[in-house]
Image (tube, rainbow, N blue to C red; front, side, top):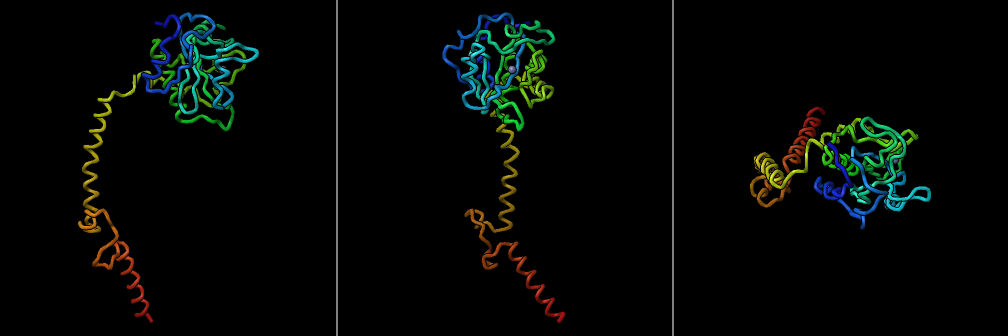
Length: 256
Ligand SMILES: [Zn+2]
């Protein structure tokens, strides 16, 4: 099963995954013609790493007209939806199940903002959004993580992107997100909160009991733990240390 036609659902599908989305004006009409069937996601890095990388993806370069990918993924995990039509991102190459040298008409390109060299500047938020976003798209088109491919894996033109990402691990995570489905519903979050409260409630009262043992209920109730009046304001630990010091002095005096 494959999706046929332009992915006008991109923004909705990413948002439903719990991701932040910026829709660029006119994205539904932007592109170099219409998709055939969509068979996967092709992963790239921008090679820049700054906050304006998306402009090149939308507008293109002197040698290549934009748009250059449907999506840009910012370092903070925000997706910019640039185009719903075909974009020039794949170039020549091949991948099992994809038509050779024709991936632009069959894959959605994600350009992730990164400098593309060591020391790598990927952020945890960005990587999770990368995997979640790819998973959301693949789930939508009825494909699995085998169709989440690095440009360097597909390309016969020596591409290296996205540099610094292990695609075996990446696909493993993507598959997990595909199978994990959409983010938790409010009811699920409530259930987990109840579970935590049920377990942490007894721990909370244990801590209160310990404080009362150490400092007495008056100080506990007052929320102050300065020390015991009977010990001239010392805490238990301070009082024991004081006793040890005095004992040491007595022993030294006896040995003399
Ligand atoms: Zn690329």
